[in-house]
Image 1 (cartoon, rainbow, N blue to C red):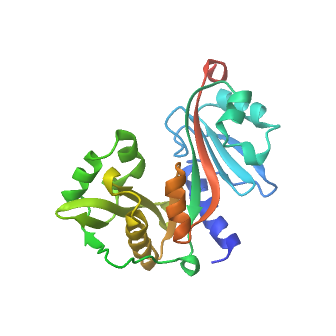
Image 2 (cartoon, rainbow, N blue to C red):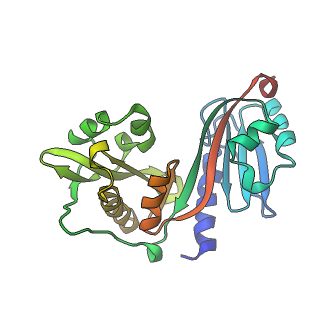
Length: 244
C-alpha cells in the first residue's frame, strides 16, 4: 500500500467518525462542521484530526462552529493540533492530546519476535488482563483501551501478564491497536513483541492497523514495527467565550 492509499484509508475512517457528511479538503486546511455526535472528541468538545495538510474539525453547536471557523482561519495546517496555538486563538477550558496517528500497510510491517520471549494468545477479557490494568495508573489504563479489545497477545512473568496488546474494531475495517506493559517490565522490548503479534493478527484479518499515541515511548514502538505517522488529533473543551 503506497502513501496515498494509506492516507486515503485513514481519512475515510475519520470522515466516518465525524458523524456527519464531511470530507477532508483537497486543498488542505481545516473543514469545520457542526457534529454533536462526533467521535473526534468527547461530547460538547471540539475535535480536530489532522492528516497530512488537511484537517477535520467538529464542533458541538453551530455557534461554536462559527467561532472555531473564525479562530482557525489564519492558523497554518501543521499547527491545528498544537494546544498552545489553538488556545492562543480560541477560548479553551480543557485539552486532551495531542496524540499522533500512525498507520501501517502489510508491505511496511516489520515483525518482531525476540529470542527468549514467548508471546501467548489469550481470549478477550482473560482474568490476567484486569490484573495488568490494575498495576498501572488510571491514565495509562484508560489510554490503552485493553478492556475493549480483540483476543490479547501477552507476555507473562510466571503467572502474571506483564505486557499485552490487542486491537479494537473501528469503522471501515480499521484495527485500533492497544498496548500496555507493567511499569516494572518496561524497557525490555516486550511492548514491541506483543504489539507485533497483535498487528500481525490485524493484518491477517485484512484490517488497517491504527496506532494513536501521546508519549514518545509509544511512538517509538509503533515506528519500530513499521507504522507511519500521518497526522495527529487534539480535543479541546470550549471556554465561555466560544460556548456562548
